[in-house]
Image 1 (cartoon, rainbow, N blue to C red):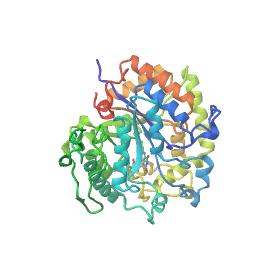
Image 2 (cartoon, rainbow, N blue to C red; image 1 turned 45 degrees about the vertical axis):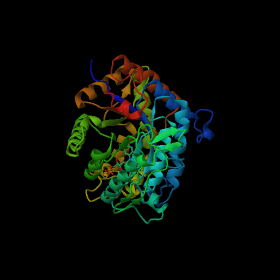
Image 3 (cartoon, protein in one colour; image 1 turned 90 degrees about the vertical axis):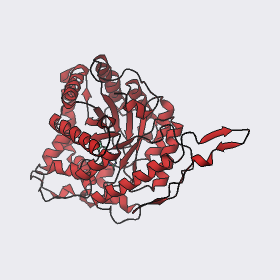
Length: 433
Ligand SMILES: Cc1cc2nc3c(=O)[nH]c(=O)nc-3n(C[C@H](O)[C@H](O)[C@H](O)COP(=O)(O)O)c2cc1C
């Protein structure tokens, strides 16, 4: 029996409008802020026994592209977004096993507030929460929190290191058996088993303890996407699951190998970190039907090239409207945003990058369930594990069914992904294989 791989879902563009431009918008289009379509998605993912869903987030209306916010608002891209933590209980109530991973930024939350929120969510979901730990992308978000701009890129990871220390200490401040609940004595909790953390670092100071007992998972699984050398060092130290975008199988293999070596250097077992690769499948009843839909997506993407360019601008702080569409991007470009992402674009033209993005080039996951399952199988055999992070920023209900009721059953039939959850907690499901 071959080793199965993991599946997760990236709710790209966060808790925002999804299918409003698709051919299947649903009759509740105006009510995009209601949890309904996200609940339908979560239930589909649970049918497919996915490990978790990440709720992406950013917290500003960007204005990097052309120096104003019009393009972002025109496409409903990167704005509006509701707070991901609000969606979590709705998804939790509608499912029993699916892990739920909100994005919460170390540049926006104070550590105590984040530790308390995540601890509370882990309690009410009975151990199904993870934390997508991000450091910030765009100065516009920093400006909403009283700063002129973000801290320098690598320093943000120094902050994140301290932040993660504070948060994990708070999560573990109550010993597992601190709650006694002895009615006779009476003793609700044993004070000798609840410890202040007295943390004093360069960036943060926190007395603790947290004012709630240890949650079911205690130390909640951390998800991370650091791609730069400093980001990878952070991820190797702290992450339980790493999400990344790799254009080829060779890149996937090399990236996973680097992460695993980084884990060993940080004194960890590399098998404790599950690396999941982004994949945007397009499934239909025949290869022709699927390819035709992909072609139509590409036509639409090139017609609205400013949508892609504006999103590239948001995550790098570089206004891509200023570059000739057909001139390669110069090697002198730098960013205080997503460094590893920009590095992949240097030397390519904006038009080619937009085409790549809209045609989902790189690895092609277009076809019948049988074909796409075969592609995924071959990739995992070559890469060595650990799984895929599926996404579609503007998914509709039809897409959910195609993936969860078309592709996933084929993966399961081949013995590649789980058919039933073995555990209640997200961490245990991640460590199952
Ligand atoms: C799949 C994926 C999801 C991400 N989700 C978010 C997010 O929700 N919010 C955010 O600010 N950054 C997000 N990022 C950005 C990463 O946190 C990170 O900044 C990026 O991968 C660049 O890595 P670097 O900071 O080491 O250069 C995501 C990245 C990837 C690949």
